[in-house]
View 1 (tube, each protein chain N blue to C red):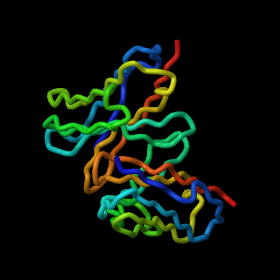
View 2: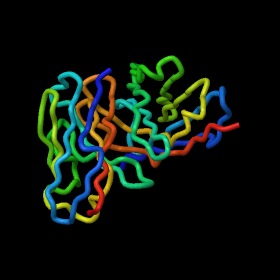
View 3: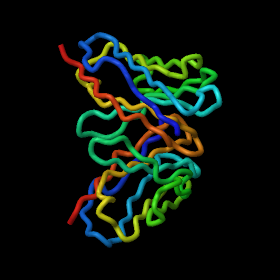
Length: 106
Length: 118
């Protein structure tokens, strides 16, 4: 199966900061990469699909890029409601998630 | 509006079989998409269990393959999970979701906590 590795595992940031989370696949997955946000006690919420397509209703401060094995989720101007855990997930083959990145308040 | 709702016992004894059902409303399973199960141990990350297509095509997480069965009942518009020989390590919140390879998991159930304990 394809392994997904996210970095960092956690980060501290302030409101208004630009935040970047990376995700690396153990083999090429083309653009079959999705990003989710999860808040405590809630189901994950799809943010980005196909590496760079913004899910309907998701604020434009979220963006995704990359292809092959290396991908990035960027949040421009971090908002209070963005403090959460973020997961990447490959859909090239049997789905697998990264281990998650927790974004905390500095 | 597509909605998914998990149901099933919240407590299962070790070595027994965990059984959950996901009822789908607002969308007919037979129209398409994959339908999947994901779990999350308390305080830990997400783990994909498996996916099923309305036609019955299935893909399981290799680490759980020998213990997992996912099935679909299009007449009831629901799909189910069975996980056999459970241990305390299977204690988790179990989610069901609608999934496609090109667009990810776009609709999720609220999740149900299943505790494995004697």
